[in-house]
Image (cartoon, rainbow over all chains, first blue to last red; front, side, top):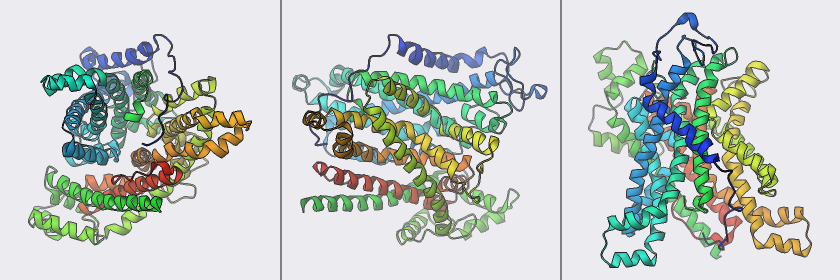
Length: 285
Length: 320
């Protein structure tokens, strides 16, 4: 952009209330992640066990969040579904982050045609919505967790690659990095010592925001019925299965919806916090 | 003259990009279907004749769709036919692909244009109302509300709207695209799904513009705020919003796929999903092609509009 340089991005740095990010960002996400990791071993009820006598039951002592139309415990299904809904979202971000970091740094370090190829490819991929990628891949591979993960990874590494390339080429042009290159340090060392510290806050921000976006994408795929095979629980497909009863027993829709909302919102809070602390992030990303 | 030359270069770049996207989508879809597990002819025969089929039927379907030939022959035939605009016939229904895809495209574009237009209109109003009050209570409330709304999946917004307006109040049809007013709820769902991000872009654009030196200068000259905002600050504010059309169209397509299924519309999204699941190559590629080309078209229009709005930015990018 050839616009005149601005002194600062929109507004002053907004002051966040102390502890806000910890309480509304990291805490809920960490709890949900722990549930996703260890939940299935803590469950006392099988999430797929049907108890037709309890069908449509509102929240009670026996069913903390009520039961769905087949009498399955909604709380147990939420816990079982966290692995896919949040777990795959996080794993997908980690995979795209690693790929993007590698390709972005290589293209910034090498420049020339390598950079051109990586950046043009990123442009094309970023023009397509990630939901479309996931749908196409899961349709062609016949659905399943692997397909969702592959689609997310394929559609999201370019964002990280672009961010890395932008920050890395700025860092690589600095005098102290030039000096360390002239002293004979290898690319790996330059990356670790000079590029990584500069890029960390940006990566944290984009990574957290992408986790939120992934939770939404995964639940949309589940809602469309392309995610898993039916008995297995996933937050989006839980909503798809029960949305016709929304008026009569809203708890069946509101519980998974709340889980999606909490995950996405806390991820957004983390992402926004880091991007507010490090101005100009949206100009690079 | 220079400005026109810049625009010409941009136009040529985008036409090239559109052709590139078309060939890329065609090739990708072809490779993907070839790599798909299982026998494609079997999936087609199943979609055509139901689950109880004999192996002879599968072989007939294979011969009828030309899939008994060499892969390269199939690919070249497909590229040739798609470059001449012949998208071929659906492998499932046997009807030509183009009219069917075009009909769903019209349904989709009706919903999309209404929804995006509504979102743009509301975002501009919200952006100006909130951006001029930067960091005050209204601005903070807006940032909070938009963070929450952007964390709600679009199908939940749709379910809430259906429950309220179609089931409880019975004002509007809940699904299908044959009754009057069918497009209202889908468009509103799309608009609400796009609103948080778009209005944040608008808000930031307003804040940035007002930080520039000329609003202050206008103030020093004694101009009124409405005059500054609507005479001087309006056009530069539009630049970031128009430049955001690229990500916007990606969000829109993602949202439309879900909205198509939720409201049971015969749109491009449903068509794409159905054809991918049935391994209907010509249909999937037709829908994919139309989506890809419209993404490129919107990106091109946005590029040209940005240059018209701000001639300083006349650096021609050859890619969308």
